[in-house]
Length: 375
Image (tube, rainbow, N blue to C red; front, side, top):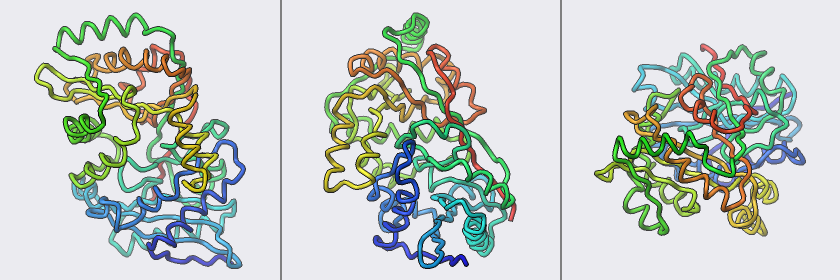
């Protein structure tokens, strides 16, 4: 018999909630664990500023006293109010291969959502787009990344058995990094620089980039992504939160800003050495040696780079601004010995973004899906 327990969001409980996933995938060579402390912070109403406009509930499933599944229910009031919807989200979902478990977990979240007046539920999604989203449906034998969900192949069949259907798909690409900047990229970049008066900015000081463009960077993300599926605009409190989290970690050689002749931010590209192997070795913990593996991942030899973020101001999209980013970044990729670049998930309908990979040898190696159910 399955017992569903509502989990109070204490630090101890959230650690158990997060660790269930890590234990479930123990020994899986493709799974990349999160840092437990990061997920606990994301799930904590005391820490995550998304709770200014979100509410959440957490459930765990038990059989004979042992955990066999977990799920979060989330309501993002900001997105619902902007679009006039009554939609809940589910996320942070994991379960053993037992239909009784998945059905009980989803039923618990559905009942919670109905009690809140919601008419539809979608997921897996997080609080905002900076959280993991999309259930893996292709690419189970590809090493995952720090920014994406990995799940077993049986998950999607369980969703469909519980009455869920496809809402939206994202695709991901693995690109080979060329030894030289492609000629077409160079030509486009030079034309765009001249036509629009754009220039590349590079920084050596984290403090300086934070002070001069930290907030502008996240405002640009809001503008660039605003029309995308279920996008939740970042609040000023969230921007402050993410500036402190992310800018301290980045290798600034792998951060490129494009500005116009008035110094206004037009485009940004942020890359990071793949942390997948380092996170696997850390097993989600900073201590006793997790910090060492993560430091080696950031500073040591690595043949793969993750394209964490590419954002272009709407009026410059489809005008070649991306070419300036990669004209700058490719020589740095070569300098650090990267051979492959991982794209982040892109909506399958977003041909504008996918078109930029045509200049590289690439393969679409993963697909992930959000599901919906009317309540």
